[in-house]
Image (cartoon, rainbow, N blue to C red; front, side):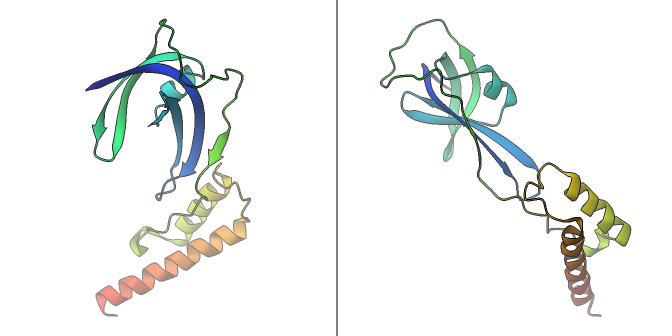
Length: 155
């Protein structure tokens, strides 16, 4: 486990939709001219630009896994000036996509309508897709699933 201390000089927030359709929010802190990311909502809301922090974490393959972050009173001299008035803006990094991994045995017409209603009413429908367009996309996925099932069964 590694400990890092320093002042937060920059904070950005990114939002997106995973491949399974689940929304996610990630915060990226710049400390000692290096970026550290976390999906932890508590870390995202408890820390701001200008805070002096002590982080613990470990290298996990390609990524550094942030385990904890706490504010500390020690004053650090940042290598760059810290603008404490800067408000982080949310950046959407992916376009919401409908889940397309359903198999045909999961889908019925009532299931299509229920799924379409959830997708239409969900916050991730930021593009304002029409309900009829969502239903059509779900029906296309149903037809694909049926054709795949027929192929697998040799029908």
